[in-house]
Amino acid sequence: MTSLIPSELKLRESLQLLYSDPVLLERAIAGLRSLGLEQTQSLDASIESDVDLLRRDRCGFPEVVYGSGKSSDLIVEILRRQQRSGQDSLVTRVSPDQAEAVLRALPETRYNPLARTLRLQCGEVDERCSGKVFVVTAGSSDRPVAEEAVETLQWMRVPCELIQDVGVAGPHRLIQHIPRLRDAEVIVCVAGMEAALPSVLGGYVPCPVIGVPTSVGYGASLGGLTAMFSMLTCCASNVVCVNIDAGFKGGYVAGMIASRRAGREH
Image 1: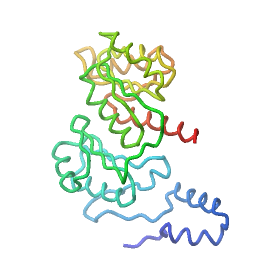
Image 2: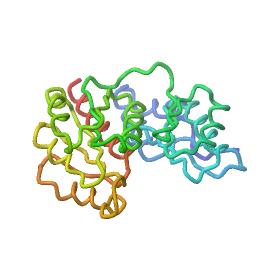
Image 3: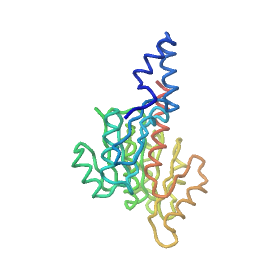
Image 4: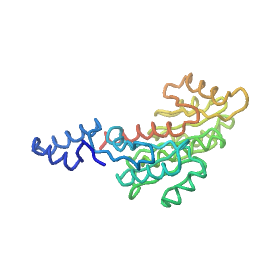
């Protein structure tokens, strides 16, 4: 199998003839990476996929694998390719059967059955930033979505802590955590039913609150639509909202905010 695009080593050797300054050389290589001008290696011909190994260069973090609908063999092959490239791997929405197959092939993978995620880190797990992200749930029924956010943050190597079951039905439970929450870089707030918690929490903290509505609730909760509308119309100015049950998205955006702030401080 051949490629018309040279490997990075060849590319570096060629560009060195044009750029004697090491700083300019690295900028040129980074610019070409961002355009995808690097050698690509296809998966086995029997497996249809094109792994985006340049996602980390363009966007800061590797490609995340959405597990639903994919074969176990495909997931294993994608993870192996990411590992060979020195990239951390995260798979979301995996079934128990998928997880069992991946763990047989890659036993060092971490499986979280509640979050329905698989996570495989390269090398030692060091944290990318010093600031902390808190993931807060209104009720214990919201925990699966919150766990997905936590697993995402851990894959991003962002320190995080889970605070559970502090919904507005027992407001005293939230108050005891406010001193710690006020030191957060970002808070991911996971809530179903009427989703009042983000509004209350937003009025106590000086940081962004990313609301994650869940499909938890009775009839008029409309499968999470009521919670989503509540978060979207929240009067606390620091509250924003992602999709229903989107723990990954809430965790990912929170991790990006924390990581970028840490990068500016260093």
